Amino acid sequence: MSSVLRPYKTLRAAALDEFIVNKSRFIGHAAPVQSEEEALRFLDSIRREFRDATHNCYAYTIGANMGVMRYSDDGEPGGTAGLPMMEVIKHQQVCNCCVVVTRYFGGILLGAGGLVRAYTQGCAIALKAAGVVVMEPTASYLCEVDYPLWDRVQYAMKALPVQLTDVSYAGAVSFTLLTRSRDAEEALAVLTRVTDGRAEILPEDERFAAWPEEGEGTN
Image (cartoon, rainbow, N blue to C red; front, top):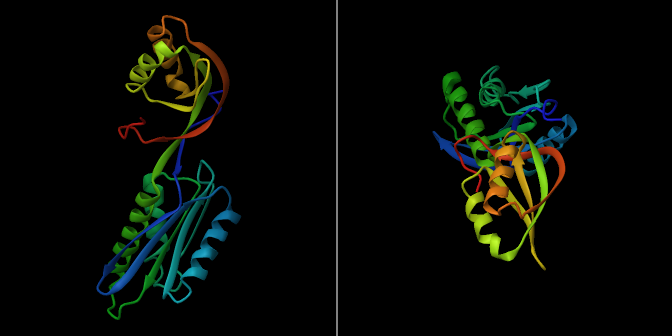
């Protein structure tokens, strides 16, 4: 199945950040979305909440291959807001996301170049606040180990790109092991080694799950 599921980047959760340039207040909002309808609902919610703003410019992409891309300058000079925002999204290769940059005009004109820089920054800080993650094919395993082995398992797993979830303490320690499909063979080999082959491991399924970008760590 892993040959069918291909990784793609998206956002962890809706978030915002803001800054001020020459008395103009810029607020960057970003959220993960799964459809164009969901993107438009997010945009509408921002427009309602910030209805007194001078502009609510936006850009969004839908589909793991960015098959749908839409953007708007919302009254700013053509090419100074929506397109620069879309370029940030494309550069970071973030799919299924919607970004809205709200502007409250501060009375000082920024010029075309200043607007491009401001909306570029607004989009970038919004994506950073929302958290870019990689949706990767992920294997899930139901595992069970005896209590004397649990410390060994936790220590060994800290050195691997895995997630231990749904930990339950009953007659033995049971947990769900999540690992990128490409890392599954190594993770299972380590689990088998540190438990001397006494871990019970039951494969569940393969799905998309969020992982930090390479180099950011998982544990």
